[in-house]
Image (cartoon, rainbow, N blue to C red):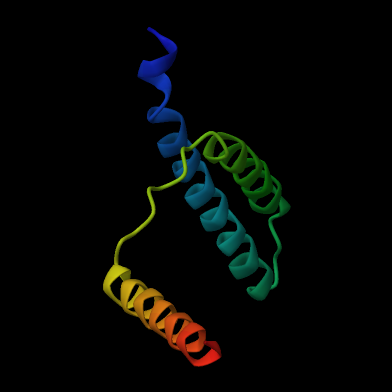
Amino acid sequence: MAEEDSGPLAPRVGTFFILMGLGLIVLFIASDAAGEAVFDYFFFGVIGLAIGFILRRKAPAPPPSSRFGGIRRMRENAKKRKEEKAKKKKK
């Protein structure tokens, strides 16, 4: 198995470990609220979170969103017009 094949899988496994770690910590909090704390849930939860964050660290950054591209272009155009107006006013 090549390195490129395992690339997208590692962040997914990391997400799984993060979710399982959070679930175990929630179980620890629930067991503590019930009056009988089970510290194994807490320790395994922290280990799961650590492994998950290490694996998620390798995930590539998401591409930039063009969600507000129209608003950004309108602001840039307004800024250019304002600068041009200021130049004409100085002359």
